[in-house]
Image (tube, rainbow, N blue to C red; front, side, top):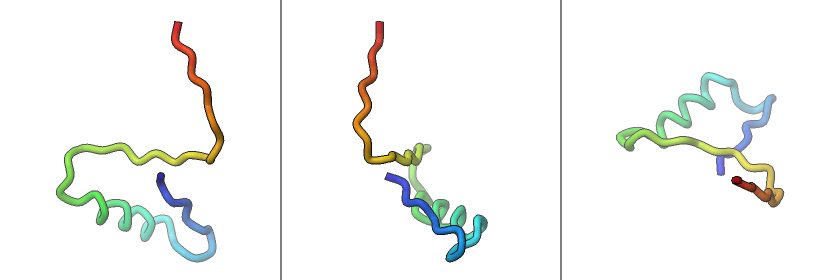
Length: 44
């Protein structure tokens, strides 16, 4: 899951730079942040 930055400890620019660094030279990907709750998805 995607880590949540603390507002007081890291700037938005630095956080985005961190995400770019860990995804460098990878195919296109999607970072997902969960809330640790179970979800039931229903398709009809």
